[in-house]
Amino acid sequence: MIINHPLLGPRDAAEFVYLGDASLIDRPDWEDPDAAEKYYEYLYLRDNPAGLHRELWFHEQGDRSWLVVTRNTLTHEITNVELARDVAKAQGRSR
Image (cartoon, rainbow, N blue to C red):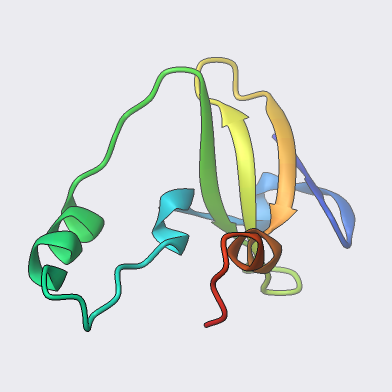
């Protein structure tokens, strides 16, 4: 599988580590009164979708960047690759 890195171009998937659902970018606020329940859901509950899915990948054997990869879990076709920092900024996360 080839991942088209936004900065480095096409790279073999062997250079990357899959880290899970891209929703992990949206970490709950630990000061929230319902933080315990939200962290339970954040840490332990996952969907197992068939079809398009946004995933976090880490470029371990490259520039050590985090990517959000949109991939079809049935065909493994990659339709979009973004830097995770850009996705987080677009969601209004500053940290």
